[in-house]
Structures are given as structure tokens and as C-alpha cells.
Length: 332
Image (tube, rainbow, N blue to C red; front, side, top):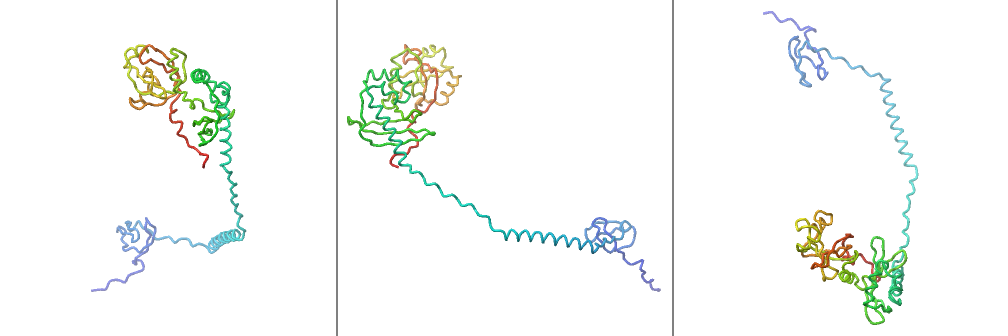
């Protein structure tokens, strides 16, 4: 048997480039139709579709020197900048300003309350209620009521001789003062004053509980013009006559029982359920718990029992909680 011919350079495995990843490897077969697999990425291709690898152009030494010079330049600039910042003195930090000495609040409150006490003494020491008006809160509005009240309860000048307690109240930027004072008759009065642009004014309404007195006078003067009143309201029961007098029906209206600051001599308002006020009352009023409102009322039908009243203007609510305010007592 004859030996096979020696392998020639043409039959040696050749290096090819993968058509997908472009990496070079030695082809395991030189058969043109053979399908071979790239050992790097696993891509398969016919042998005759694969060409020899192309050598990457070598970068010239000049290019490498240029890149190296650029890197060195960036490093030097960065280092120089850091060194300059390090050598510069640290910026002087602004010292926090020392807080201004707090104003001693106690003498200020004492002086303010002294002004309020002077106004109260001047009002109560007046010869009559007309002379006291310039020192009374809302004296113009209250003049008719004051005339009625002091016709029954004659005005007598009173001297304030001793302070039992005092407090300064701050609400919404407005000042008010509450004083508990002993009089020259040995009685103790609880006084409330408000600071106005014209000075301190004594609250005459609270002093003599005029709100309830105004409710009583409202009944006595029936019929009469509308009167501003503090009332309590809750759901009530009206007769057919009450609804007919208002031109409404029990289906279309709500009956509201109104009383003064102290329960007595009620009035009944018949309010259209479809009105804004009717919707408010349906939402807020219950049968048991009265709510405080400020209203302008007119005696609409005093012949009914209880008399039917008309709410000509609804001012708002909340007068019963006016004492629930943040306070600064004079002892603090």
C-alpha cells in the first residue's frame, strides 16, 4: 500500500473571520459547502462565506503620543485647580447675629390692662348711661336698647376699688381684656373690654346680660321693625296655621324653634327647605341640641302660639363660644 501524499501549505487549516462577531479563528474544514460554528459567539456559516480576517490598522506612534499628552494635560489642569482652592483661605462664615434682647412682656401687659381698667372706671363712674356712651362698645347700635333697659333699671355710678383678676386676650390681632373687679358696694363685676381705634370700650351687653333682655323686649314690641338678636335654634313643630301664615306647607318648609340666650318665650320660624337658610338648618339643627346664631328677626305673626317670627337676615353662628379664646393672664 502506498503512503498518502504529504500535506501541503494549501491544505493547512486557514484562519477566518466570523461574519457576526468579526473575531478570527482557525476553520476546522476547508470544504466550501461545510457549515462551521464560530467558537466565540456560536454563529454558524458556510465555509465559502467566511473570508480571512482583516488586520486592524496599527495606530501610529504619533497618535499615541497625542492621546497621552492630552491625558497628562487634563490631569495637570485638574491638579492645579485643586491646589489653588486648597491654598486659598477659607471664606469667612457670617456669624449669627445675637438675638435682640426680648422685650419684657409683663410691663407691657400691665400697662395695657391699666388702660382697660381706666376705660372701665370711666364708663361705670359716668353720671348716666348717655354720658357713658363714648366708652361703651357699639353704643350707637345699642342706644334704643339701653334706653329701654335703664328706664327699668336706673343707671347709678359705680366705683371700681379692687382688682381681683385680669387677663389680656389676643384674637386675630385684636385685643380684649377681661377684668374681675370689686366695687365700692362690695359687689364683684366681671367686665369685658375691647380695644378699638378710639381706645378701650366696655362691653355693656355682656355686663348686664342685655342679649336676653333684648329678646324679651322683642316680644313686648311686637309687631315692630327687624331687630338684631342672639338666639338659640333647634328643630321645632309648627301647626298648620304657622305654615299657612308663611305661605308654605310642612312638606316644603322646616319649623325652627328660636329662643333667647336663656330658654323662655320661644318663637317659631318657618323656613323654605329649598332656600340656602333652609338647607343650612336641615343640615345643622337637631331636636335636642340648640345652636347659637346671630340673626335679624321680625315679628311676623304675634297672634300665633308661639308667635311666628321671620329671619330677615342671617348673620352667623358661634356667639355662645366667645369666651373660648386663647388668653394671656396678667400673672404670667
